Length: 410
Ligand code: LLP
Image (cartoon, rainbow, N blue to C red; front, top):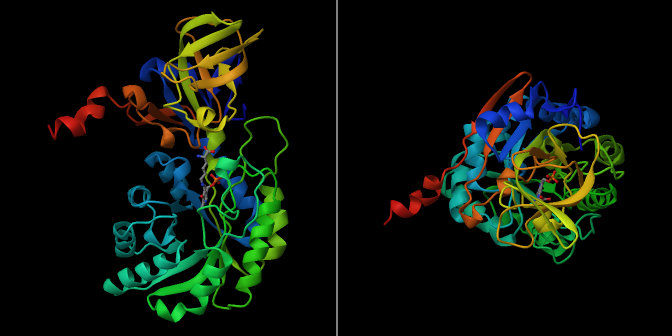
């Protein structure tokens, strides 16, 4: 959806004060463009909505881990939620202090745990009984104690796409109640971890607040029995507005959660809601054809740049860079040799031809981070707009980049 940063001015699509087409005239397409203003707007809106709880906000780097974007949020006061050594390295490179990093993940390797301990990462969100033992041993070998939040799987069903729900029974995420209680009762067996909190994250793009509230209540019911547990990490999951559907905003979550959480130290890990609507993917029409009564716009962007439509049937609005006066429904597809490489169906677009530019909206979250090089397609450039200024914050990959690791070993 269009917003205050991504909108038409005098019939031309702008990102803040820069016409999107001016950028791609220099960078080529496909290119991701991010609005720094919008990222900060979203971050501040979250902070204000939850002000009464004064939470630690750890931006979930998995949503978009571009260094310039991480730096923007870190400079604004965010910590980072990292799920791999790679994300920790990026967080540190972008200026995050190690104590402001939470390290989460269902399958952390011994090497990753070692690295995180060495770097003095602030929190470990632990999801496995064996991980407690391993982490304690590694911390001991470094002469340290790791601060731990146990990730609880509260067995609640989130109102979201099944592929991005995480808090239900049978999901691979978190510790079930028995395992959680086992760890708490046997905490003396893990002398080099300090059990100080719980973590619950029930899913992403949440359609309502109920699963989060249920998950938090379930966690608090156990935490009350263990006074050393004073921190609750309530995860992320706040939805982005890909459509006009009515979805809860930050205030709705804050109002529902605040009465429960007074007196606790609260951590929040938002990803999507901070960056989704701050990013667009600019692409160019290559060809137009009719097939079975459908008009196909074949563009130079595809499922390799933005997997969400192909992977989850996700909806992303697609608009031309020149504001249309009349539109007809078309199907927008990429060049990749997969039937599922469809960016949008029944997309209202004007008549377009070779070379015309269009923008796939709300592509700032889980876009570039999930891009891949299938069909040997180099990953796109990334640009950050800051008011009137803009800058390439990641170069377009080249075909030579894709071959390098092979040629060096040949
Ligand atoms: N914390 C944990 C433990 C998570 O697993 C996630 C997301 C987040 C925080 C951030 O959630 P957010 O605020 O972004 O909803 N690729 C999918 C989304 C996967 C979400 C994974 N976990 C998509 O494109 O919809």
